[in-house]
Length: 105
Image 1 (cartoon, rainbow, N blue to C red):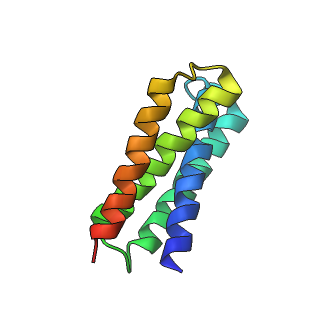
Image 2 (cartoon, rainbow, N blue to C red):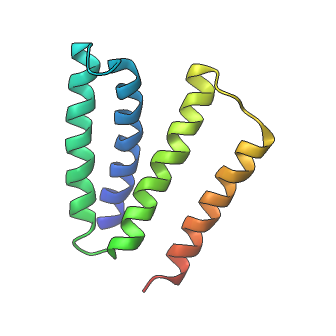
């Protein structure tokens, strides 16, 4: 169940990153409310995952999922650059996360 919590927390991290963009410095109510609520939810789920999973692995996967998800969302939703080099570095990040998982107890 801890892995489910961790994956959900990473997905929700993408939600709060996107809602922060739409909140425009917390000047818009609903995007700000979504940001605050999703931050709380993702932190709760991350904390629940860390009950059984190592802290380093949990946090790395949480941050990695947020980074990859936010970058892909920026490319598809906001027209941010989709260069081969960006995808290479995203692939390296994913490979690093897989490596951390394979070397964790």
